[in-house]
Image 1 (cartoon, rainbow, N blue to C red):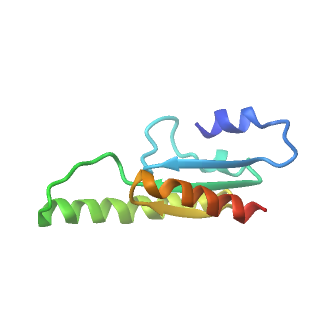
Image 2 (image 1 turned 90 degrees about the vertical axis):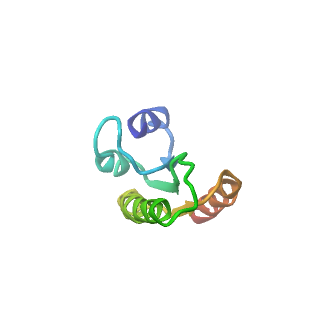
Length: 105
């Protein structure tokens, strides 16, 4: 996805991107190299579309995944010289995008 994104803006004066991801690098391997091609790559982390029961085991599993993927996603934003945000629901996405755009102004 990042290679496609940087290709779309290759002629732009400033290469700024916003990636929304659950942190699973499921296609194309580690995106760190591509993140470095942006002047600023902001990354918004979100939970995977997982519906879990409100039990201790499911909650613990979710918290561990969030912690692990949050670290990966934050690192990707750092490599891309951008801002990192975590959202809990789609309702939080507009605010996260606004914070990213404010950071590049």
